[in-house]
Length: 304
Image (cartoon, rainbow, N blue to C red):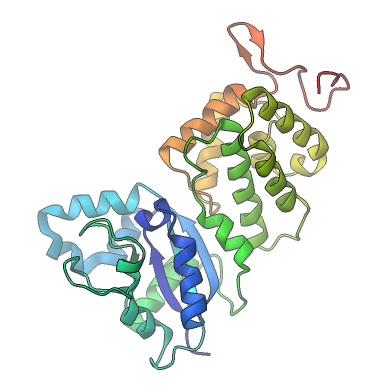
């Protein structure tokens, strides 16, 4: 097997929902498999390292390129497989990514096939230069390590689904994010638990129901899995097993940024609202308690 290829799925690719179909396409049509994944918000240093030579070419529009690349989640992906007829995976990715100019036609390229929106929204980034490839791999995966082990599709597909469906309630958004947290912990090497399939069932049961019914289902889930959730502070707060303060909610959102679970501004605001009110077991609204009991662990759950 040749050296792995580095591919950056840009924020526009994740936001459009094309990240999962794109990687499925690379697997089915080119035999490439995901062997490493980091979902993150690029910082200025990473932006400069990835696009250094091009920043000068962009000139006065460089600020917009930077804004588009750093304000939403991206995904750094390692891909391995047989690159034939190309000499290596980086060369294969370069040959199929598509032209830089949006005016050039390349119907089978990744950029055209997966929804390039404008000249500034180029879907993916990669380079055929092996030295730069290795520098990118070290920059994004040094602390996380690299292996030839295939990342299961179940995990990377959950992590790449960065936003819940449009119009999702606070309960659906919290369950969706909790599922990403659980998948991230499995990717980091934790032993499998029943939480991931349980969260999938919870999400399916929430869709299309009234706020009050969603909240009841949410409370039941937290009660049933209280022991497992208690050992993971992020999940305990997201799923209503412990009360949150404004400072605590903001700190949790910040910690997710460094744990493969970066959030859009809109989603972070929705989750913070939920942790302060809708899924906070001590919350009050206009002086009235929102939860039927003060803490998940209390015995009085008759209203459930």
